[in-house]
Length: 117
Length: 112
View 1 (cartoon, helix red, strand yellow):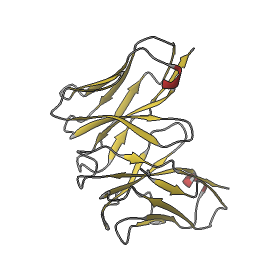
View 2 (view 1 turned 180 degrees about the vertical axis):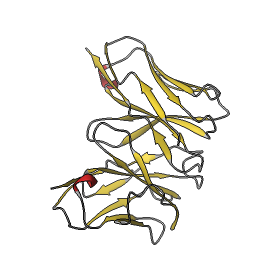
View 3 (view 1 turned 60 degrees about the vertical axis):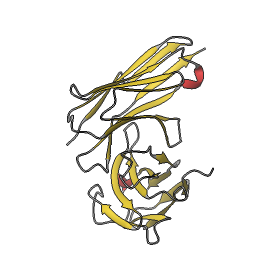
View 4 (view 1 turned 30 degrees about the horizontal axis):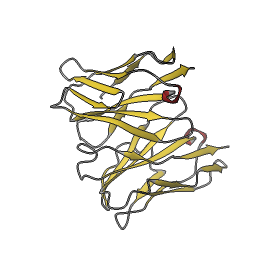
């Protein structure tokens, strides 16, 4: 079946621009995560949704980062006034269970590579 | 904060060898540990998930063990193949049970 889909695949933004990154999770998956992965590093947690509820946003680096999942399926990560340090791969993952991936594995998309110039 | 360390950072082996990747974590109060594979330019693929009450999980040529009390896990790959070349990441959950804390990964190269 279809996996987690992310778009765009690549995004180049000039410093100060706003960007929006989209994630289509696997149909029926309750949990949705956003992670940020810098070059040569493991992914870093940004935020977690259980259906449409954002239960944890403790990993968002600043108030320039905002995520939503209004109908409990598609999610958008928005970054306002992008900075060079925002350059990274942004990964979306979904999981079937409501325990946030505790009991069932996470399925990751291929990510959006954001480059801020 | 949960810290996850993976050793070695990189590994190169000839095809056919058995190999072990190591993962350690600082807080033993976890729900589960997962091993992932990441190919260049791709997302992560879940390989094995070990619940905290389990000692090991097996899938094909892969076997992962978990020693929760000592904060360690190993991923054993039998009869390695060039197609196994990738970065392998270990991750454990946090106190909230939502966020996964990842290591930096082990970059594996299997040469023909």
